[in-house]
Length: 189
Image (cartoon, rainbow, N blue to C red):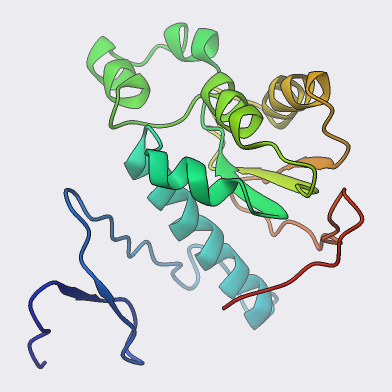
C-alpha cells in the first residue's frame, strides 16, 4: 500500500483523495456477511443498499452531534437519510445500564428522534422533498414513533414532502425524489 500525501485521506480503492479535515475523521467499515445478513434470495442491489444504509447510519451515529458544516450541507439537499436512533423516554426505561444509556445519548452517541427532528427543522428549505430515518434502535424506538416525532416537527414548519422510516434489516424504498419547490433536481457525484 502506498503512502498518501500529507493532509489527504483515501476514501475508496479507486483513488478518491480528499484533504484531511481538522479534528476527528469518521470512517466506517460495517460489513454485511453471507449468510448472517443476507442469503441467496437477496439481490446484489439489495445487499448493496443494506451495506450503504448500515455504513451511512454508522457515520451519522459516530458524529453524534452535527457540526456547522453538516448543517450547512443539509440545507441544499432534496433528500436526506438521517439517523433517528432512539426515543429519549424509551432509552431511559430500556433496562440498559446507565453507562450504556449515557454513551447512546451522549455528545458522541446517537441522534434521538427529537435531535433528528430539530436538525431537520433547522435545515428545512423549500426544495427538501424526502426524509428517510435510519439506524432506529430495535429496543428504544419504533418506526411509527420516529416518523411521528420528525414528521410532526417538519409539518409545523411547512414541510410538504415524505418522511419514511427504514427498518434495521430490510431494504427501503424505492423513493421518487422530487423537490417540493417545483425546481428541477440536479445530482452531483
